[in-house]
Amino acid sequence: MIKHKRITSFLCFLVIAVGLVGKLQAQKISDDSLLKNASGQELQQVISSYEGEKVVLVNVWATWCAPCIEEFPYIVDLQQKYEDMLHVIFISADFPNQRGKALEFLKEQNVDWVTYFKTGKDQPFIEAISDEWSGALPFTKIINKEGKLVASWEQGAEYEKFERFIKKAINV
Image 1 (cartoon, rainbow, N blue to C red):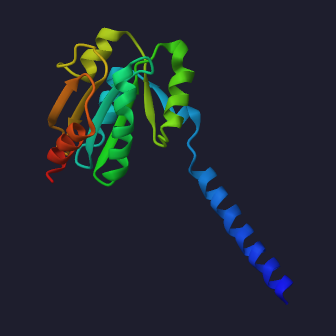
Image 2: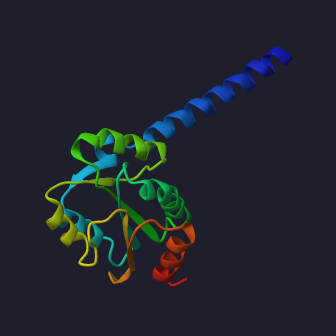
């Protein structure tokens, strides 16, 4: 009888474990969807698509940019904390031959939503993203639900700065 209960318990555990693994695998995003190529104009359309729905934080980064790497986990954490009200749009400005490195970094940071890889010439891309951006990295801008710019800045930032402007955009 005890042996039967152990086998039954083990089988129940196995069924639950297999179910969880399947669920986790279903949630994985493909590499092509995790890091999509996009021009500045295409990204402006993506940003605009959230108007009326969510606050948008746009962050342009690169794997070779130390301040970008330092602030990245803050942004991922804030996306998770405010997921019902905020959408983060990460844009990798890595060189084309560094795409694989950017993809690996996103996976290491547990990013599980669509992000973008800059395409096209630098100046038109910069101008499409923001009139206030010189092209320096990292670059961040936060837009409220109504599509109005709340804040933008070049250089890295601490968690508190990101959260302060996200809360301002959300009206918390």
